[in-house]
Length: 148
Image 1 (cartoon, rainbow, N blue to C red):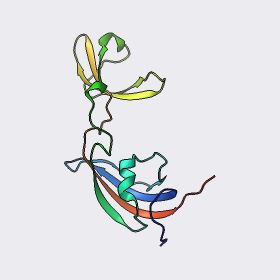
Image 2 (tube, one colour):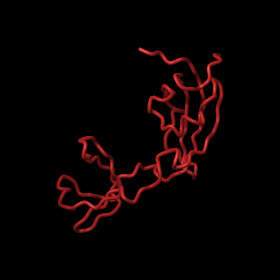
Image 3 (cartoon, rainbow, N blue to C red):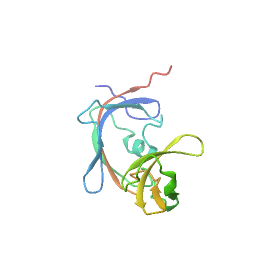
Image 4 (cartoon, rainbow, N blue to C red):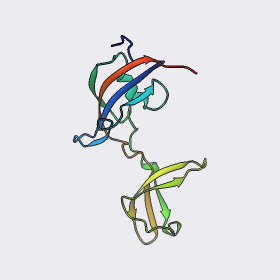
């Protein structure tokens, strides 16, 4: 096993499981290929990278990630009322996740949270915003990242 430890400039291969407060699994690599990423490449929010620092291959741990360090607090300003007439293609239903164009031309996912005759309420917060998450990891390998 290598003696490298997780830090800036390292490539990390690990298995992870992400759980909600009640133990519901949101995402996991356990039944799939392990995840490989470079520390600081943006694949993991910084709040998820921070507790991993110093771990080495063969280490495992479980970390509580607060909303501030995960996907942020739920922001009421990210909940928008849209005109029902804008939904010609589909019948809007509560719970449906749709993709909307953001002002920059990118895609922004939103969840329909309420529908009446005239309006459709859409929540553009990250689905995990405001949640405290449990981040369980099993580090498989840590090595210096290959810079191209």
